[in-house]
Length: 159
Image 1 (cartoon, rainbow, N blue to C red):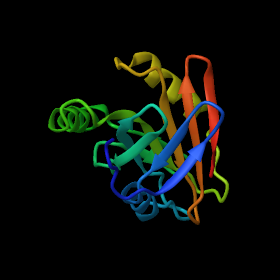
Image 2: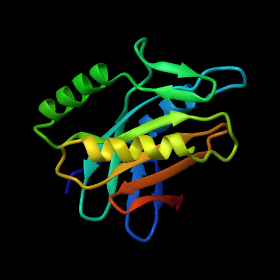
Image 3: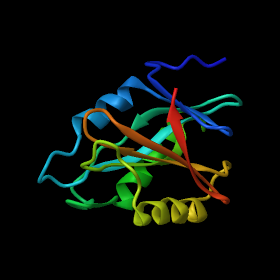
C-alpha cells in the first residue's frame, strides 16, 4: 500500500472519502482571500485508491489566470504542463483530480458558475476516472468540498 505524506483533513459522503494533504491545506491558507482582494485558485493533483482519494499537491495562481473579487478562471496551458509533468514523473499515478479556488466567505459554497465549470471540466477531460473534485477555500480555514460525477455535484463533509 502506498504511504501518503502529510495526511491532513478528510472529507466523506456516502460514495467517497477524500484526504487533503497538509501541504495542500497550507497553500489554501496562504492564498486565503481577504476583503477587497481577488480570488485565487489552481488544480488538484493526487492519487485514487479503492477506499480513499488523496489530494497530494495543488498548484498556485499564475500570471496568466483571470481573477476578480468574485471569479477565478484558471489558465489552461500552465496547468496542463503541470499535469503532464506530474503524471510523467509519477509514472501515471499522480493525476489531475479537479479544481480549487477561494471565496471570501466563512462558510464557502459554490456558485452556479463554479458548478458549471467543474461539470464542463469533467465532460471535456480525457481520464480513466469518472469524477472530479471541486474545493472552495473560504476564510478562517473553512472549506466546501464537492465531488462531480455524471449524476451531478455532491458535497462531502469533514470527518
